[in-house]
Each structure stands twice: as C-alpha cells, then as structure tokens.
Amino acid sequence: MDSIAYVNGSFVPLSQAKVSILDRGFLFADGIYEVSAVLEGKLVDNASHLARLERSLGEISLPLPESIARIIEIQKELIARNKLENGLVYIEVTRGADKGRDFAFPKGAQPTLVMFTSVKDIVNAESAKKGIGVITVPDIRWARRDIKSVALLAQVLAKQAAAEAGAGEAWMVEDGKVTEGGSSSAFILTQDDVIVTRQNGSDILPGCTRKAVVKLAEERQLRVEERPFSIDEALKAKEAFITSASSFVQAVVSIDGKAVANGRPGPLTNRLREIYIGFARETGT
Figure 1 (cartoon, rainbow, N blue to C red):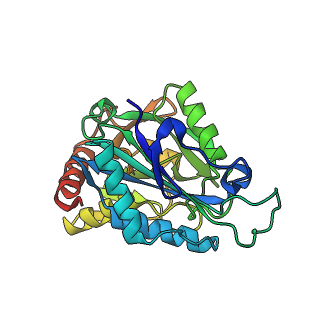
Figure 2: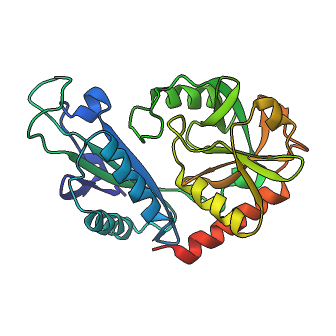
C-alpha cells in the first residue's frame, strides 16, 4: 500500500508527491533536513531534532514555513495515517522554486516543506546484535558540517564505498583523526574506561542521539571525554560504537577489516544501547 507523504500543505500518496524541477533543493542543495525516530508509535527525542532543524535553517537564513507546533502535528498525522509503529519521520525544507536558476536567494519564493515516513525496526535490528564493520575514508566535505544540509554527496560516496566493502558505515578521517560517520557519530571506549567522542564544532554535525547518550552516560557516572581520536587509538580500544536516530547505539566490531577487541559488541555498548532504548520509551511523545 502506498504510504502518505506531506508536501506544502497537502497529504498525498508518496507516489504522487512532487516538487518543481526549479526547486532550489534540487538545483543547489539549498535546503535543510531532519530525521526523528519513531518507537512504538511515538517520536523519540523529537524536541532535540526540531531544535537542530531550526538552528540549521537559521544558519542559512531560510525561514521555516510552518510553526514548530504545526510541524509536530504533521509528524503525528503522518505516523497515524501510515500506522507507523517503528521507523523514521523525514523532514526537508528548501528555499523553494524561483522562475529560473539563479544562485542568489530569490525574492518572495515560498519555502518547500516535504515530510514522509519509513518503516525500520531499530530495536530488533540484526546489525545491533552482531555489530557492524566500518571502513575509513577521507573527509572531503565542506567546512560547515554543523549545518544539516541536504548536500550529502560526500556522505553518499562514503556510504557507497562502505556498502561495496560489505561494511555498515564509513568513518571519515581528517588530519589523522576521525570526524564522524557518514550518518552517525563515532565513539570509542579506551582501555582505561573513558568514553571518547569528538567535541562539537563546525567539523561535525551535533548529533541529537550523541547528545542524549553522552548525558545518559554522565548521569551514570561514566567518564566521557570529548576530543578527536585516531583510527590507531580506535583499534586499540576496548569497544567502539556509533549513535544516530536510525540506529540508536550500535557496536562497531571492525575497522578496515581489523577487529576491535574480540570482534563482538562490548558490554558497555550493549548497556548504553539498553539505557538509550529505555530513555526513548520513557520520553517518547
């Protein structure tokens, strides 16, 4: 059955959802996107995702065409119409369509708002039980990675390289240090039991799941250090894992074909995953 999407004020079958070929999101990647997880019919950590959406839009001077309250109403309407129990709600805002293709911002253009859902059983994913392998690739992205732009070609290439290598994710490396995954935040657990993840800045996206996991870990008196780490340090670590809205917390068991520790998900990663799933269930809206 065709799922229902939202396009500029209307709920329509996904197969009939359309925007203009002059839309600046299509022509220039002039847009911002956001993804919220859905667990048991409820949105997970949604306020954090919508706050990041507003921030990214502000960074490129793009107005949100609806209020946040209305965005939430649409999200919940899509969940209801699609009978979505577990999965994701995608939001994209672009600067809209002009009469032609000019680089400068058009005057009077109405921003485009598109939203749709997808089904994914994040909690019971087989990859969460076995862990994933990652490969490393050079980080060739632009300098404002803190903006959740729809300009994702570098990530597409990284993810394709991972898929061709039989890996579940690509870790991007710059100046000898891991920045982040193609669509995730990167973590390691050092031999002295310190959780390490790169600090927020313009070189990484401020991950919402990352933020929540760091807070949950600190609340349990676990040691967290925000700094860059190298692949060599990751290979010597006790554990490695990623976080994202589409995977929650997921173990990394190999890097470039080399095992991390014993090549199986570690106890801290499994614990953090359980803690985060509990948080998601308790706070879902």
